[in-house]
Image 1: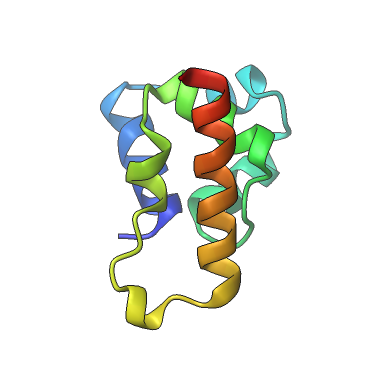
Image 2 (image 1 turned 90 degrees about the horizontal axis):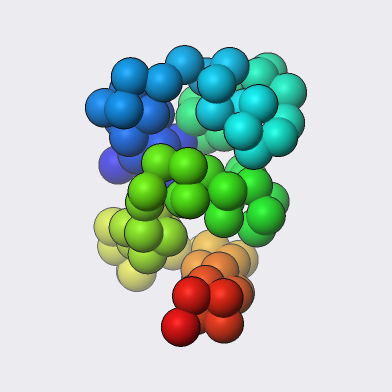
Length: 90
């Protein structure tokens, strides 16, 4: 499951609309929709806010299904998010 699919599932489980989430981030609803559809990657700050709002662990969102198929950019992004998360929450 991709990041956007995981975010959408968590949002729907909490019975929240895209508009409610986008206002809380804050960002426009159109851009948020692109994140859920995996058309646009969230910034680190947007990802942090999404995790806070939806009570998600960033490691769950960033879990790569197969490291063999992960690009170096994906791995670098995941390491950077992990580093920031650990600095803020530990």
